[in-house]
Structure formats: C-alpha cells, structure tokens
Image (cartoon, rainbow over the protein chains, first blue to last red):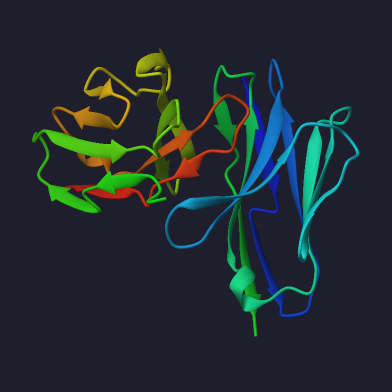
Length: 110
Length: 113
C-alpha cells in the first residue's frame, strides 16, 4: 500500500529557530514529491521535487529529495510567526494517485 | 485568475439529507481532484478527473458518494444519504497537467448532525 510518513507530527519553536521537517515515502511508481503549506484554508504549493540531490529554494525555505533513501526534507531558517502552519508532503504515484502525508503542525512562538 | 472556486463554504445539515458540493476549476486546467480532510485521517484523495472523465475513484468511501464533471468548468461531489461521519472539510483542486502542482480551493466545511 502506498504510504507517506511525516515527522515530527507537531513542532513548537521560537522565532529565529531553524526547523527541519521530514517526509518518507513508499509508493509503487514514484514520479514527484510535493510540499504544501496549509494555514487556515487551502494548501498552497511550495515545492515540487523530481530529482535527487537538487535543492530547491524559496527565500528561507528549501527542500531536497533523496530517491535512494526515499525521503525528503523541508528546511525553514530564521523562522517567523507567519511560518506557523501545517506542512504537507505529497507523492505523485505516476498519475495513478496522489498520496498525502498526515502533515507536520509547526507553531512558531514570538 | 480567480483560482479554484468551491461552494458552499460551510454546510450544516441533518443526517439522511442529500449534500451537493460544487467546484469550478481554474480555466485551462485539465485535471480536477476531490479531497476530504479530517483530523483523524488527514487529506485523502477521493476521486480525480482528466478532461471531465473520472480516472480513479478508488478513494470514494462508499456508494453514498458520487462525483460528476459535466463540463470543463464544473464538478459536483454528492453524498446521499449523508451521515455524521461524513463531517469533514472537502477540498477541490485542479492542475494543468500531470506532474504539475495542484491548486486548491478554500474548501467546504461540512457538518452532518
């Protein structure tokens, strides 16, 4: 059965801290891995990763994929209270389906 | 771009009633997805369409759930009869093609009493 696991499930940090969120997966036919940020409403797209070892960056956020070890990490440096959200990892199983992980709930305290 | 538009935003109804959720995808997006999100189970894919044709409905929980996409700009998710365990946030998302990020609507928060 296709599976996406995220850790930690919940994390509380203070502003300025750096955090690393983890996503591991087991799918039959991997095509890409996506990270989303969900605040109060809809998930919003952050990154799509298809190749191992190539870091994607957007401001203080960055992500990398390891297709050999079947995991990805999402890093957030110098966290701000606006980073508080649920971060979702999803895997595209070659168009057969999208499998989402349970999410990591990040709380950034002032 | 208006984004993915879902209606209603909130729905509260009694068990046994029929519920219809609506979605307008982003123009030009060929893929449309219906998801359900709960605290217990997270985000689950229910069904997705490509060019208005249902491709995979293996995530639809049971026969009480049905989805249609009569044209490229409209889709419905229907629950009949509804049950309290159907209470969740239902999201619609669309994407321009395979291996493209999905754009989510704001969701419909459904409460079945």
